[in-house]
Length: 114
Length: 111
Image 1 (spheres, rainbow over the protein chains, first blue to last red):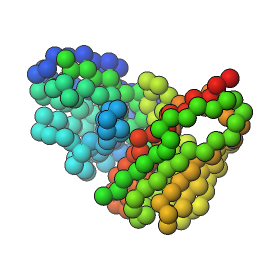
Image 2: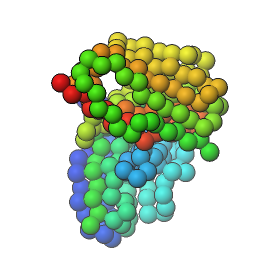
Image 3: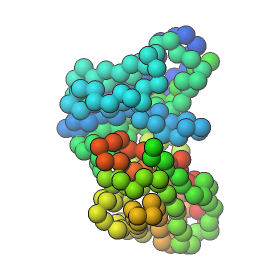
Image 4: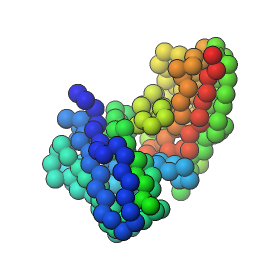
């Protein structure tokens, strides 16, 4: 298995533009997590899905952020409109167990909003 | 509210030295605790998982301990190598909750 695949690796966009981050989890993993990492706040869980259904989105910072998982092999995190404070590394992870063992992280998307 | 703290924030040691990384958490009602490694520009790799009923876990040169009552965990690395250089993150899972990460310890092992 190629692991958790995220795209793009890097994204630079102008404030106000829509940004879409993509994730392909490991086949057979039924949990998918979106994290954001910044120097100031460290790693924060934004949202997670179980069997394609959003379970907890309490970490989503505001209505500008939305996430979908239309099927077991694909998820998106969208920011519209983007702001400079959204600049961070966004990680996707998948797991067979919500508890954390067996978490596999993708390499992340480094987002810069100018 | 559960908070996870890792000390020190950064550590530099010569190759071959044994070292200890510390993690503390404020609420002892946890389901498990996990140590991760993050290399620059990469995602996180799970190293060790300790369930709340366990006191320690070992994998190769790594040993992690858990003292729930005092809200502490340590990650012991024996005979450190330059390839161990990375950021090490501790994360706790509260009962019924989601993983909460510490800020990490950036380790540098000098040849």
